[in-house]
Image 1 (cartoon, rainbow, N blue to C red):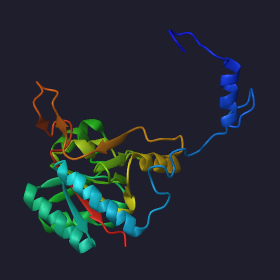
Image 2 (cartoon, rainbow, N blue to C red):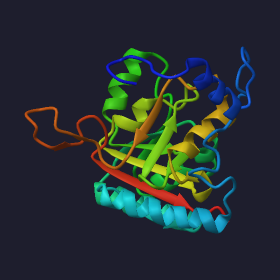
Image 3 (cartoon, rainbow, N blue to C red):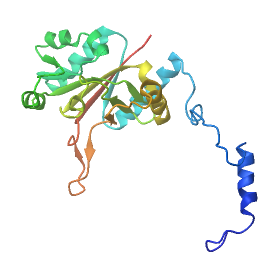
Amino acid sequence: MANGIVTGNREAFFSTIRQNIKTPPGGKAPRVENPMDGLFTQRETTVEDRRELRERFIQEWTTLGGKAFNIKDRVELAQAIKQIIQERQLQKAMCWDHPELEKLKLEEIFSDTQASLSRWPLEKNYSDWIGKAASMEAGIVWSDIAMAETGTLVLPSSSPGQPTTVCVLPITLIAIFTTAQLVDGFTGVVKLFKERYGTNLPTTTTFISGPSRTTDIEMVLTIGVHGSRYVYALILDEA
């Protein structure tokens, strides 16, 4: 081809392509459901694989300015949360209405430190909950998926009890998940989304990689404008 002019035999060109993709003239190439499957991610991962992903996540998350903890059981989880409450001097926090968070009985942990934890929804009406949400010093979420290679939380708002407000409004974010939620990269995230939601995707999915950073204002790096300034990841061992 030169100066936009097709040279050679056009039919022979397309015939070669059809032959290579095994498609007759006028036919369609067979659909490949997961063309990236196995290319960048392992088809299945073991507990040990996911523990290695945990170390990668912690490395990336810490490099970005967040703090992460390996958590063996609920006793260690309570200790870690109390340490955060003390470090950030938290008095009020809110959390998602998520079945995994409910199992952890976080209200008891906050109560032991004379702090309060409110579960979403804070109030029924917008005019009532918006001010209450703005006064919260921390938000607690369950990360359904976490990407190891970039240290990223993937937070789909898949129900009314899991709004983005809890993820980004408070100055402190605490994300809890197990090693079972870890995937290596974005291809793994897409694969899980397809399995869980098909074409009925959540209206909003928030990706959080460390503290919120922006240079929108006069190219000056500012932390905690569009999201939380202090971010913690508590990773429970699934075994």
